[in-house]
Length: 315
Image 1 (cartoon, helix red, strand yellow):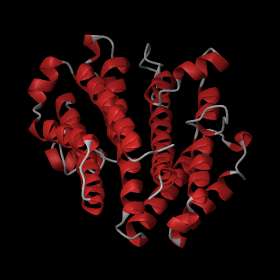
Image 2: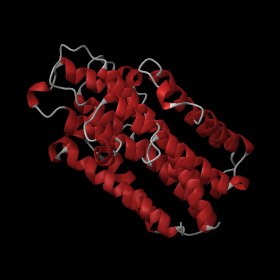
Image 3: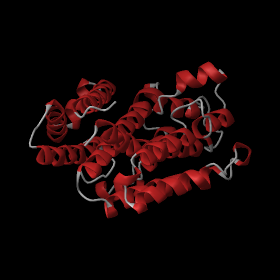
């Protein structure tokens, strides 16, 4: 397979996953912003959304002061922001169009229909009451794309590169969401265990569609930080956990290895990360520092992405 084909498939899936993740982050920010005004001093929900999306520097450079309307517009519609929902869906479609013959009809039509509908939605129409409906639509369209990939593509190089992009992006997003909550949203130790603390942990779980799953899995209606962190990092039962994502990354790389008859450094890096995740214990992670652990993971995930690009000759 040509490197540019692999690159397009990888980034097509990665950008569609990013569109869904951005919608999830915006949903959390919106939900927290609707909290009763009785809890004062914690109105950084939109700044934390920008930080989690790694978009704060670009936003501040363009807009300066953080405000709900400007953040929503920046993360959904702003074409100067390469991570806005409009930008990433457009880029995913462009990548898909570049490898149209490598895709099934269902996969292509899922991306193309999403873009065609998205361009009809105007920023002025994105009122507070319409935002949740729009974000649900984005998530549904991303899941439709993923279902088309899983349900119609042959298990060959096209499929494996698509899966790599999907789960590299998902792992990065889950780590960032958890890191922002733990390290930024609650800077004061006195806030731990408060009503605000519980509400924020609940929203973090909702952002990865794990709210009900957490309560079922732990048989506990309380939100305990070490259990939430364990759920999002170490539990392979959760489809958006770090360990689940790396199981899929290793499966995709193993598929490529079987096709090519070779293994490379990227295979070793992915296997090492999965091994560390499976051997991980939350007591050790918290003792060494959750923020430090997540930052190390995010860096390692980026290094793996670069190694994949170099190994398979992405342009």
